[in-house]
Length: 507
Image 1 (tube, rainbow, N blue to C red):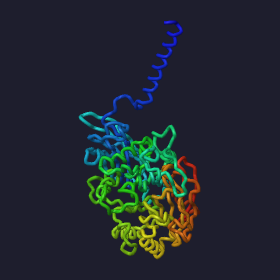
Image 2: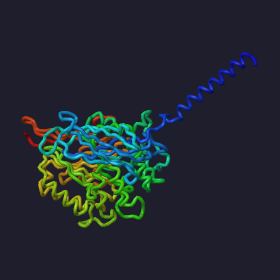
Image 3: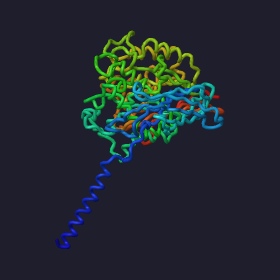
Image 4: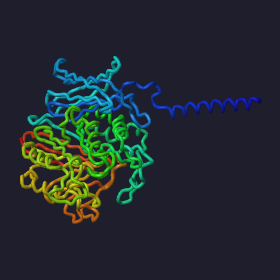
C-alpha cells in the first residue's frame, strides 16, 4: 500500500473511531454508573402546613431518573427528623418513621405535629432497606404565623402544568396546538435545559415564597388523549414524571405546598362524576389522596376542602370543585351545585367566623371570568353552575363580606386576568404555568364568551400569550400605614406583567 493510501486509511479509521465514541456519549444515559437502590427520585414533598403541623412525604424509587418514561418504586422505611432551624435545643427534634409499599405507590408519609408557629424547620431523611442505611432528601419549611402574628407572608399560585406540551409528544392531537384566534402554539420547549423542567419553577424558587399553591391540572391524565391514562400504572406515571423533574425537586426542597385538583388530574377535561369510563371517580379520589400530601394515610376523614389562617391579616379557603358536583348537563337552578350542601355550609360558616383582614377563596375554576361560551362545567358558564355562583355572590353582599376585602383567586384558565363582577366580586386568575399550555382569554363583550353584554370589568388581561404564575404578598400595618395585600402577575421568566394592591386596616 502506498504511503498516501496508508495515511488516508489510518485517518479514516481514526476519524470513524472518534465519531463512534462521540455518538456513544450522545445516546448513552447521562449517568452510566449503576443506579442507587433505593433512592428518592422525586425528592421530598412538604404539604398542608399549619401553624403547628406539616405533612411530609418521600417516594422510594429504584433510581433517580426515568426509565422508559417512568420511575419504578421500591419498598423500604424512611426516617424523618424534623428540627427547628435555630434557637432550639437538639432535644426538640421530632423523629418519625413510615414504610413505603405498593399499596400507596411506595410513598412514605408522616404528619409532624406540635410544631411552633412562625418557625423555620429543617427535615432530614434516612432510607433503611435490607439492613442498609442511605441518605435521603432534605427539606426546609416554615410553619404558618397564625392568627396572633402579623408577620409578612408571600406565596405563589399556579395551574396548567402540562408535561406533554412542554416536553413534546407527537401523539398530542394537532388541534390542541391551536387557540381560538388560530395562532399556533409551540409544540414544546426547545431550550437546552429542557430536562430540568419548567422555567417558571426556577423563577418561583428565586422569589423565596413561603409556600406554593397548585390549584389543579397539576398533571394531565388526558394529554396526550390517544391513548390517555386510565389504569393505576398509567395514572401514577403522570405524577412520577412530573415530580421527577429537577426543578420540581429543587423547589419543593425549599418551599412547602398546598394542593387542589381540577378536571385533568381527576378524570378528563371538564369532567363530572357521571360516565362509565376510566379513571372512575373512586380511582380519581384515590390518586388525589395517594399522591398529594392532604393528610395521613390512616386518616379516613381527611377533607380536600379546608381553610388555613395564614397570619393575623390573611385567611385562605381551598374549595373542592370535582368530588361533590351535580352532573354538568343537568338543568341549572337551586338544586345544581359544584360544592355540595355540606361544603357550602362549611364555607359560609367559616367565612363568617373569620376576623382576618383579607379573605381569599382559592378556587380550581373561575367564578367571574369571562370564560368560553362553549363550556358548561364552572360557575361562569351558561347552563353550568351560575345559579350557585349568583346565590353565593348575593350572600357575600348581604353579609358585607363582599365589601370587606374578600377576593377570589382561580386556576383552570390558561390566561392571567383581574376581573370585577357587577356584584362587586373581584377575581384574579393565575394563568397556565407552562408557556406551551397558555392562550389569550375571552374579553367582556365577546359573543363567544360568558359575558356577551360586557357587564364584567376586565381590569387586567394578558395582551401576549405566555406561561407564568400569580405571586401574592401580605404585609402588616405599620405606624399610620394599613396592612396590604398585593397581587403580582409574572411571566415564566419572572417579568412582572401587572401589580394590584389592596389596603386593609391600620394599626
